[in-house]
Length: 329
Image (cartoon, rainbow, N blue to C red; front, side):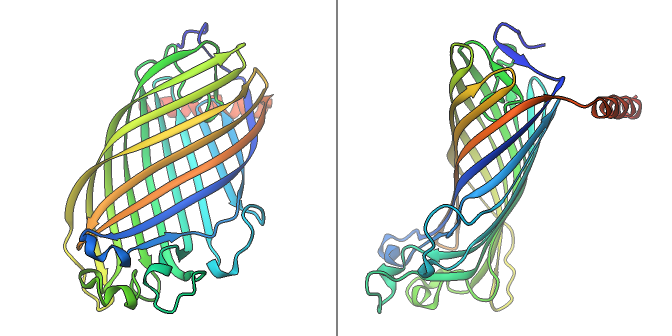
């Protein structure tokens, strides 16, 4: 069990929360040859803010978000974007596992003014056909779990009572697809110069990642906190691409290093919790003379409360646990 002088958990409570998030999902297709850098694509989504809800009980944490009409002002030059995301976390004192699904549809090319000859300085090349999908399972092992809570400032399943540094191990497997639903990923204006990427319609990548990191939770008056987690990750990538002419490439490999960072601050008491968090990660792979970078980041503001779990939920949990134990035995 965690040291209750440092970490407090509330298995008797059900935590309900609401949050709003401003997401960034960027895809950069950059020629490895610098002489073609003018023709790179910097795809960005015209995403509005998301409104989401969280539910946590014992070792289960679920959050779901949907698009709202709030956020950055509508800019018709940037087209329309849609996003879907759902996460399920299973938490144990030492290990946190997260199953995630993300889908983003509709982008504009922020770099279009550098390669579109008729540009007037305010042109965005809208690409409603560009899509990004990711499904994966990622896990965290907390070496310092008795006195350091990785989850407290992120999922509010726990509460850090005293400041502490912790050491972490992270790994995961993700399957990512970047594709155009009706053409090639890059435009004909670009591929007339950047010929090695001229016919690619979709990229499919299996990403195996592992790395180490550290976290710090700074607690003031047992309720106010500041948290920072930082990971250095090794990424092993198997990828395959399809062309508009119907060619399916063989699977190929590459590897790279990248970083993941999470920062959060807020208020976490026995019942009420509130906080602001920033999450970001970058992945890079090379495909046919191009460096493909995906950059996912979000800023979230959360507010929630811990309620006494209803009797039927506690009874159902005990019954399900007994059945699982019986299956294991």
